[in-house]
Length: 131
Image 1 (cartoon, rainbow, N blue to C red):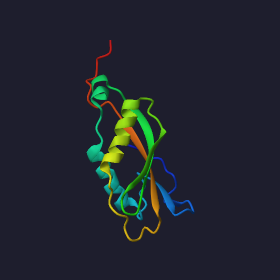
Image 2 (cartoon, rainbow, N blue to C red):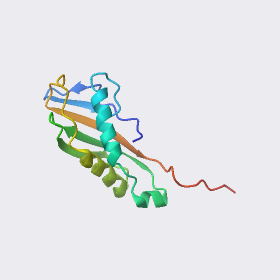
Image 3 (tube, one colour):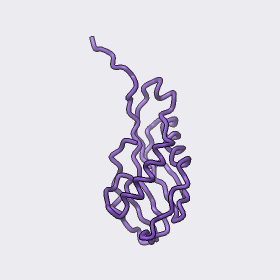
């Protein structure tokens, strides 16, 4: 998964027992857990065949929430790539990666909401010479 991530605050507490973080956060509190979340998603994230064949590219932002037991509470697209086949593949990867690991004991909140930037780049098409 390539991505800059969207910083929703370095572990911002919303005051509701929820923490919001970027999937790309480097915060020592969250980095090990998020690295595992990211690995799980990457195992399931596939570039759709149609996108590979046509060189379709795009970026989208997903927000998803995990419960203390590692369950997936919600997934929603906050910024679409503009192409449903790309959006659907990213959502499916987040869903297929669940359940996630249980929260470490130091996480005392009830929901971890993660903002992730999914970037589809055209890596497989040969370059055409320009004339």
